[in-house]
Length: 139
Length: 262
Image 1 (cartoon, rainbow over the protein chains, first blue to last red):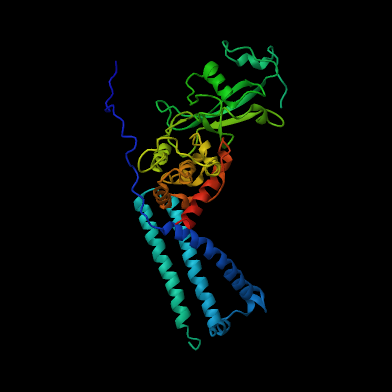
Image 2: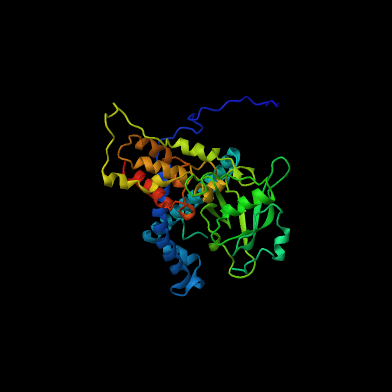
C-alpha cells in the first residue's frame, strides 16, 4: 500500500479566499464615464477633424497663425480643453482596464499603472498649461 | 456527408479487433483530441483517431468509442450523458459545447473527410486530457453566496412568491454549472480573478429572488474590480450556454441593478 506525503484534509468549503468587497463605486463610475465620454468624444473629435482637415482648404492652411486665431476664442479653447481631458482620461481608463486584464503579477501591474498615470498627468497637464498660457505673440 | 461504409470496407481494417461491428449508414470521421498526460507529457499535444459515426451519434459517443476500443487512457468527465449534469463541457471545433448535446449530423463536412477537434475548456488548469481543475470556477461560484439568505424566524409554511416574481429570475435558475460560459469568456482567459459569467448568473438568480435578503451584499461583491464591470459584452457566454440562458443579458441586468437600484 502506498502512502501519501500530503495530509489528507479538505479546506473548509466556505472559507473566504477572496478579499472582501471594497464597497465603493469606483468601477461603476469608471464604466459609466467610459460610455458618456465616448459619446461626447465622438462629436468633439469628428468635429475637430472636420474643421482641421476638410473644411475651408483643409490641412494645407494649418499653421501657427491659424491655431493662434482659433485659440483667441474661448469657445475653441473650451472645445480643445474638453477634448484633451476626455480623451486623456478615456484612453487612460481604457489602458488601465487592459493592464488589469493582462498583467500577470501584482508588481508588473503596479509599475505599468504607475507609468500610465504619470503619462496621463504629464500629457493632460502639459496640454492644459499650453491652452491657458498660449501666447500668440511669441517670437 | 461522405460515402457510407459497409462492414467489409477496407478502412475498417485498422479498427480494433474487439470493436463492435460498424452499424449500417456509419461514416468514418477523424477525431482530433488535444491530449495531456501529466506523468508522461511535457506539454499538450494533438492526437487523431479514426472512428465510425452515425448521424444520430453525439460527440460523446465518439469519445466513448475511443476510450473503450482504441485508447483506454483517454480521460474526460461525463455523468448523465444527456445534457443535464454539466460534466462534459469541452471545446468542440473551437466552441464550448457539451459533448453529449452535439449531434454528428451537424458536424459532417460538406465535402471530403470530416475532422472534429476536441480540446479541454480554456482558462482552467488541465489535469489530464479533457479533464480540467474546476476549483477556480467553483471558488468564484461560492464567493457570490449561491444560497438563500434570510433573517428572522422561519415561516411555518413555504416562502410564497407570485408567478411574476418567480418569472423574474427564471432564466438563471437553469444553470447546470458546466463552466462552458465562464471558459468561453476572453476576460476570464486572461484574468482568472474575474468572477466569470457563471458566478454572475448564479448571483443574478438570488439578487432578483424576492425571498432573498442578501441582495445588497451580492451587489457589493459584484461591484468590485473583479465583478460585472469587467464584462465586455462579447456574448461568447450566451453562445456557449448549453441551457440557452441569456447570460450576457443577466450580467447587464446586474449592472443595471447596481446603477439604478441603489
